[in-house]
Length: 224
Image: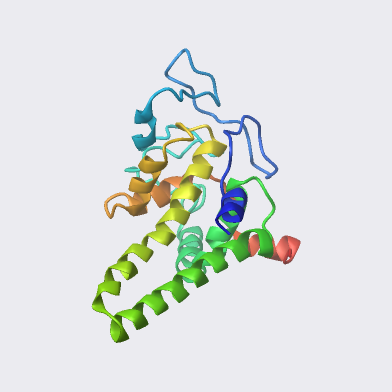
């Protein structure tokens, strides 16, 4: 299961070309290091594992990813120019249909069409395993030993791992930072001060069709 999950949801290498989506394009940002080219990275130092990659500059299809602290910038996810209707639509998609939105975003980050088995199935299976594991630990805590209680807290990191992988995939799609910055991505999605900022940054980097699952279902139907 772990091997299948990794192969399905983790992008292996930085992407150097435009993708299959309507508004996909090569990365729009410029590297500050003259010795680097898009898609290149150094693997000689272990410090890259801890890089936060908090500032994406003008990376992404939209060129508006910016820094994680630019939460006041709402385009393009809330419309271009920003407007109340598109803002409410984005908010409703995320709060009411979060799993569907994350599934579509996962497919986009892998440059694939969204399918139930390949993407929605992975997310739902991941969440179901989490619920079952928490239920088992709760029963064991109540009827066997209170020492099982810490296991419930440990299981809470499972959704964070998914969001960490999602952030890394989007970074790799637009050649931001090193593919080895796992710890930095983990910190960005699990820290209470940066998790929402990280989410907003990811949504600014991708076009609306990158997360708009409802439009995708209306235009293309449900793909198995």
